[in-house]
Image (cartoon, rainbow, N blue to C red; front, side):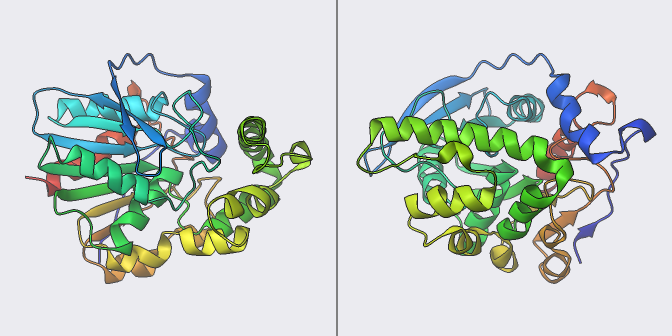
Length: 319
């Protein structure tokens, strides 16, 4: 029954989920990560930008960022530094259109895009025989879906996901409908609409951005753009087929899911208690606090506890 009692305890003044979510953005750490970029050409004519942090190790962690994120996020750069101390090299891959340069095709990325991850894994195995996967938020859903929808590559020995919206419909509804989440919703929608308008300028015969600035919810955005652009009927079809929760029972490598109970992005359906009880390879750790990719306890300055926890989990399960 791998439901893990959590050792994370936030100070009393940091126990609010919104505080935990916002404070790391307001007080960013100064992290200087010397990534080396590689452009990976894809079979469909598009590309992914890969950011490598290599040491002298023979083990590699592949990192997947969250919605509208990139390898520049502090949570990506921070985990690479922590993992480097533990002897892991890192590869942070940027989703299509997230590396600072528009991708070449009308399509972009989405929460269930595992084929690109498979391609990145294949590239990584040219240099490393031992791999681990770590995903944050949307990237966590991608990692978990990949692990359970089909047998993963034999080189993958362990994985972790942090604050993953594994029931996309329920989590989208929470962001759309809860008044206190409007600050996050608006920020995401503005960023996504900016990219849609850029796509429409490049592909006017394929992408129609008319009225996109009037969209106010993930339901509206995914119905009109994300779903149809990526082969889904609508938002409901996209959310149903892309949610990772339905694949958790088939995960066969040691996998940790960190889901704070006060994460403002996560609905109750994103806490897979039955799956963790039934699958000996799937470990669910749900501390009372932590916010969305927050986990500040101030025991090591502004370093999130989650970085140390993920490194510890990989150390326990990859010899």
